[in-house]
Image 1 (cartoon, rainbow, N blue to C red):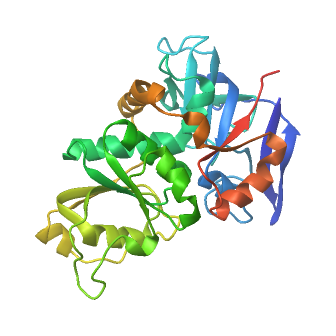
Image 2: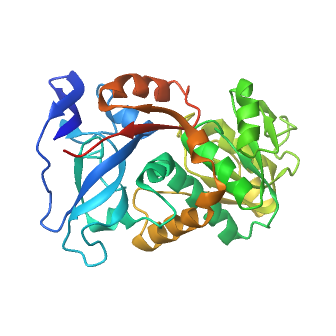
Length: 328
């Protein structure tokens, strides 16, 4: 099969399309014929020299994929089932979705709702899954219908879909971005207004800012997350899933003990099967309300992945990069 392979031996990195054989890691792995994959920030890190994310010297990249089950011993995932595949070690320490076929443990394979095609599933991808998981976490925390919700990194894969999903479910998303020239595109996705990164919180000389946000979905981390915590309303929460700005968080306990705010960590990698089923079912419920094609930054072939990684690393995406594959 054709696959995009990342190989680094003796500090020499080689990336590109190769003919390889799909190999199961465990006897009960599910074999999926891949229709589409997507480019994630993690994929770009895996394909970088001396990567701290990649755990093996050589592997097929791609942390997510969507396609059809070819072989399975799991009664919940019979042959012919359309599925999304993402999470765990896929594309990090075992072969991932940048290939015509992928083997994966059943816990990382989820049947798709009838309303979600395999193409739409990878426009959604890990990014959209994370966005919906974040929204559900805020709702579980008590986010009130119609509330104004801040979304950071709003032109990226997670952020742009968070804006669209919030709008589709009756909330009023406020998009924060460093790409203000994309304001109209974000408004078209459902943002009620667009603000710059410096506009998240006021009163920079004080411990706490004005209470501005009923909730927030943060895809950036670092100083951005610290400013969100300063400016959440009493009892509000931020669902945090990103660290593109920094993995460091410098804050105080004041937002937590004087405004009773919550910091909710969002992990899509080891999400339980129940969480995966819930998130994909929720995505299926709103699929007809979303213009998913408008969330596609570009569509690429395996050969185009190196340049796509550069775009992602530099934060120049507007939505998702879709990778097209077709089984032999």
